Image 1 (cartoon, rainbow, N blue to C red):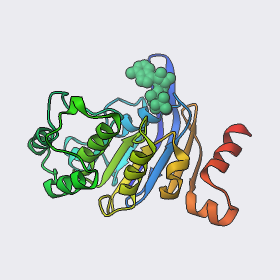
Image 2 (tube, rainbow, N blue to C red; image 1 turned 135 degrees about the vertical axis):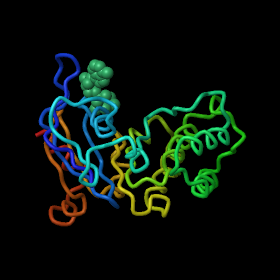
Image 3 (tube, rainbow, N blue to C red; image 1 turned 180 degrees about the vertical axis):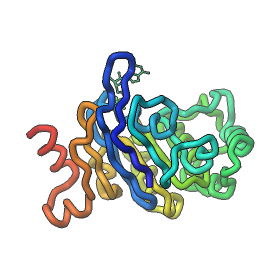
Length: 229
Ligand SMILES: Nc1ncnc2c1ncn2[C@@H]1O[C@H](COP(=O)(O)OP(=O)(O)OP(=O)(O)O)[C@@H](O)[C@H]1O
């Protein structure tokens, strides 16, 4: 489980995260929801220790993040981090050299799943294909937790559907996923838990299934109630 406990974070004088707490379990998809600038990306960076926090604590399976935690948890940013002149196959070699937990079989399977050509250069990929390669590079790591920042950003409906399909497939397996998205209605049926954030604070954390069954409400219904009053 990932536990974010009473985290405060400032950029300069600006308070971005205020006493923010939530948990995300293994084998569940947790979605961080909020308008632009509420601090979603900052939370992911804080979990990965890519940005320091001012106070609070973040635990991964009960432990603070360490150097070797990167074999256990990975962050898939919203843009591809590979050099543009690389071909997809070369990106695979790079990942295999860098990470002990790179799983070449899963990478191959994902390549087929997304119908990508390994000889294609990163620079020449369409936005949708670049998003798929980006996701593939993270999913092919044998980690327990995947953090994904806006995996559906700026891509067409069919590519979105294909990416969403991955979440219900064995390619995710028993791993824990934390993702952010503005395309909530597209993936609402895939999410286990929603964490609504406003102004750097968690304003509601709920099980999507429980709310659907007990109150007959969708995530979008809850968002309307919470954000629009
Ligand atoms: N490196 C930085 N230095 C200063 N301020 C920053 C930095 N990174 C983010 N911020 C500010 O922190 C706040 C939260 O940013 P963050 O990117 O976490 O929001 P977000 O919820 O992910 O937004 P979006 O939905 O647009 O991606 C914003 O006001 C942003 O301008």
